[in-house]
Length: 326
Image (cartoon, rainbow, N blue to C red; front, side, top):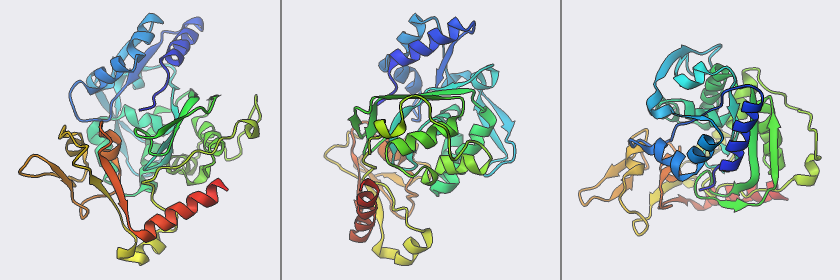
């Protein structure tokens, strides 16, 4: 797991205090298990660092949610948003520079997926399409309307992010009053096409961001570092092409029973109910129900969910990776 450094959280708290504000640090874990957020805040060191810096800690899991209308919605007319977020005067996103199996890259905009209750997150995943998912996250962003973002890219993550990738010493910190513009620059920095990032495309569609943001400080070309994408990533080839390939183009998550400890994280968090519990207590993923949201893989603490691809799917994704990294 590669998470934002607790020292950065502490530094931002001190910055808010110096500006005359009252820092509040909040988060909401993505796993359907009571106490998951509290445990994550503690184990990561964020809770201790924030408290020492004089901040209040809020757990979105227990703080309550309010149903609000979405301006000019793309996917959802109303969404439940964590109360502490709605009550804040200023909102700062503190993302980590990482790859992501569903959205290719996760950053300042995708970070706000965590302000939703788990039920809403599952509904969004059930859209079953990464572009629609990106539009839904853009709907969340349009409600929250953050004021600033600081991305921790000192140590990033490539490969099978956001949970099982490889740490990369990328050595950067990015900051911007515009989360969408920050994500565009960050995607370019790691060698990804910003306009193919679903959350960025969705936000731009809603009128946020700037496709050609101005970079100040160290020139981008001096800090560029191409990240390896997720091995489970779906080809970015046109959807009609992949549909026409039918059974020759398949990508299926499978559970490695040797690694699985039967904790049930995949089973509890599968939006379409594709993870099935068998009579012997083991779990199996039904490919007919799977929507390739990769939540099972992301939330498995033992990296027991693996991706099996047909030869054609493997060829397409690996070829695109080689072209991108050239």
